[in-house]
Picture 1 (cartoon, rainbow, N blue to C red):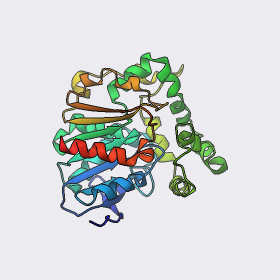
Picture 2 (cartoon, rainbow, N blue to C red):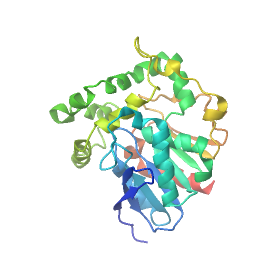
Picture 3 (cartoon, rainbow, N blue to C red):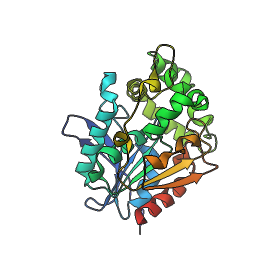
Length: 296
């Protein structure tokens, strides 16, 4: 069977947001949706779209604020409830219930919430190196290692972060990859893809950090210290596969401790040598684990 080509389209959602999307596979087939993180874009999923597009309708949106998707100017518009509104509307357009919703990094944030609040939209959830809100809040409050690892989040909230990150050919952006295992896979061609993406705007992506209270506490901001959840607010109600690259220096494996309390139907896949950027590093391993999740 030939490899399906990647197509692009714009999903115009009923609440006025448009998401630029990459897709593969026949319309009307069982559907998969893939959500990227920071500072990525929908193109990170291209190998997986091609892999699954022979059997599924695969859609990878650029989240709001990224690439050519709508980018509201106000920080409030990047709160979790609005991200979830986007993804829920996209799922309904794509064909719910999805066979799987797949999220990495920031893409996992709305994916977790869909699994908690809107389980009727999806048959299963796959989360890749994206912390569950309850364990992330706990670790940010109590674990000094996590607080140090996440200190960059407070830098990204600075009002001048966009200018600092864009300066000198994004000199402060490349270390997000290079210092976390990116030297092997970050080819010149991929760097050009990222340059083109970031040139379309960084303010929207940075607003995700500004809008979220889940960051390390500081003298002027309680951050995660001011967050608490009731069990019903964070319990996932669908079968969930968690894939975790254990060499992730920003999101250590301690975030997995006790996760089964909030994810009772969890299948955990630990990948000892993989970093935060496991989708770039080992896309076919990720594909195999998604295949296994679809069979379970």
